[in-house]
Amino acid sequence: MTVLKLFGIVFFCGLLSPSQEVLSGLSCAVSPRAMQNVLSDAIIRNGLIHQHLQGLVVPNIMGEGSQLNSPTSITDLHLIKVRVPRLSVVLLPGIGVQLTIGAKLQLRGNCLVGLLSEIIDILVEVNITANIKCTNFESGTFQVVTEDCLCILGAIKIKVLSGLLTLSVNELVLHQLTATLPALLCPVVDIVMNLVNIHLLSTLNAVIPVGTAGTIHYQLASIPYTSGKFLGLDLDGVVKQVGGSTIPHDSSPSALPPLMDRLLLLVMRQSFLNAVLSLLLQLPPQTFPCTPDVFSGASRLHEAVWTIAPAGCSACSGTSPLSIKLVLRGNPLILLEENKASVKLSVLIQLFSNHLDGSILNFLLLKADLALNVRVSIVGGRLVLQLALGSTSLSLESSDVGISNISTLKSHCSSLLVETFLPVINASVLATVSDGEPKESQAHSDGPEKLCSLCPPRSSSVVG
Image (spheres, rainbow, N blue to C red):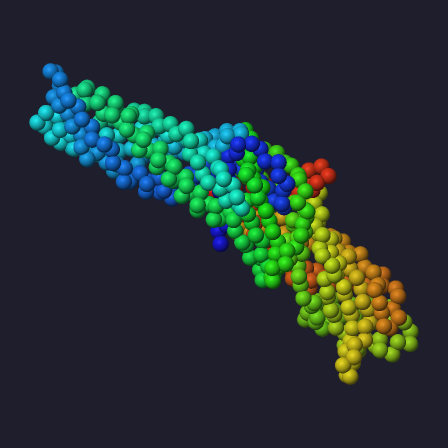
């Protein structure tokens, strides 16, 4: 699913006053250039403005004539082509977004000057400027209002087949188009903006599946706000498990870091990421034989365990088959620091053997507290957290055979987790939060409140 354009919607959200609502896990700052990219795609490149201008019909232009000029009538004047459309966006703090569309309109009709009738072509430059506001916000939706629409005509070129064109016809056409085109073009802009609103709003209020574990429900949380440099947006990110239960996360206020020269800055609270990780890492226990075909260091682990077994342990022979069970313990915790992210989690490692009667002999039950280094990237429109082992702390939980000194097992258990556990973790930590190109991102800290800022560089097309 191509989500968002998730933040393409935000260009609409010019406000009457800055929002002071709390953040619910996610917020973003969108640059004017990013909004311009989104609008250019939706209105111009996708042909929306062409489509709704195509049926444009200009009222007949009539001139009574005089002693020096013949009567003139131009009828059936209609649009045949829109040339070189362009679009620009300016943020209006406390008001909204000012949208400007410039284009050349090619009109064609029938021209009768006196008794001479022929085809007339008119090429007119227009510049349409309108203020866009959003109103009536409720449950993640709003209405778009187009205000103060101004249509200014530029150069006009008129051509007839005979080439015989009087100054009076030029003046007549300029006067009539100046009077009639604004009333025709401004309603088109209003229609187009409302259609874009419907389309983009459907991409913002979205339910994103997270594998088979659950979903993330995104919804506009409040009316966004405009500053002179960016448009700010607050999103609700509700993390739900399969079955409908919600994983809670903190929604206390925090501030957006500077946008700098980026197109878009997406900020996710540490607590929101922890909720997502808790959803993603609902892993079933892994049980497998301690053999080289599963774990390359199986023989060395066997030897290390038998070496530390107490003397007189009849079950601790080197020939006893050994199995391994890995169980994730508790919820993971992501920690964000300046330009650094890590995940803390605990894993229970059980080394056991099965007796013929079905009973289990627990040689060792260990707890490994892991510190995992996180590399954050956006790939294929998905936020990807790639985890690598940073450090391991090993402690003994229990042993049925009386093993007490496990200091020699740390390196073997670290290798075991790297080979068998981390690939499962990395296959799971995939969360869809924004649409973008594969770009590096950064972890960011803002005072006491830690945030994860996904900062696509200027070349990114996140909102394109």
